[in-house]
Length: 120
Length: 355
Image (cartoon, rainbow over all chains, first blue to last red):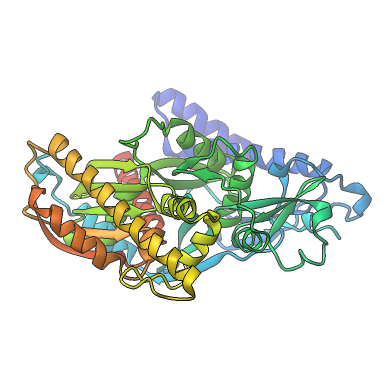
């Protein structure tokens, strides 16, 4: 979305004195962009590579892109003693999968006659 | 190459592609659920760790186990911590105690953050419904700190987080055919949570400070051993109708476990009775209500039968008939599954209101 279109959305919203759907989307996109820039900036000082996976607005296909190329030299990496910044090295997470018809459950929930709930 | 240099994948979803997850923050297990195609996938990790000095263990010993390291310490994580603790006869560290973040363990929040990140990953546009216990009626604990610390953890990982009562969540995953009406018991490690819901609305929710850990600690105290040892035996072929399994020592431990199980069930039902008398006296409830049994402590063989026997002694004082007493389809994942349904229901309803 170019700057002119963004400007138009903002002006339209000001004129109508209400927050349009386009403005909401624009705000979220800008917020995402800000986070992305912060992360890229953080990655320039710490060395692990970050692969950003995102969906493009047009194709809705998942694309992966190596936005940043960083040195792999171990001398560039300063180990942190803050365990909050550490990664779990291997994984033994237990995983299970169940077939659940979420739409069916959600429509059952929607169909509940809340008005009959005498307890409010 | 240092393993900490491995690539990290961050989802940069577009605003319309919210990553929706749920997490059951249990004292013994952290369980996450999310939708994948037509399926609900759950992932779980044991919620525990074991710190050891780096010079106590060689890197070769660590090659196949789950751990993180600081300058001078190794933190063995999850199931591996439990195994190592049993080998060294040392108690594991638990980030949570009695259903809440432990005030005794300084590293709790960091370890919890790491494990949750392992389960749900990072995103920029996520929504997470996480389980919290109801306030206890037999202790002065407060869930505000616990609730807000978890909210911060999820927020740091990129999720807008919303807490929901863990026992009420069971009704969402287990009572679709009962119009989302039922009474659920979540027999956890740290505490036991109870909720009575009518058409998905909780009308009574509370917790008591006793759970599976209390059984282990009480049996360990009675027999002069460490709670880990009791937990290990309890989780291996416990049959509450027959404790004469294994050698004499093991059989004695199993006997103690079965006595404390009965005591726990009686204690919880005494409190249910009291709460019903005080809180539901003037309520018009449906004639019959199903009871759902879940949580890791309920996995012992014979638990539901023992619980049913004891409930029958109390049922005359309940203001409703018990339709049936049944086990949850999966005692360990039903809370996370229910929280996920609740998450989707709230998002759907909010989207509808926005239109």
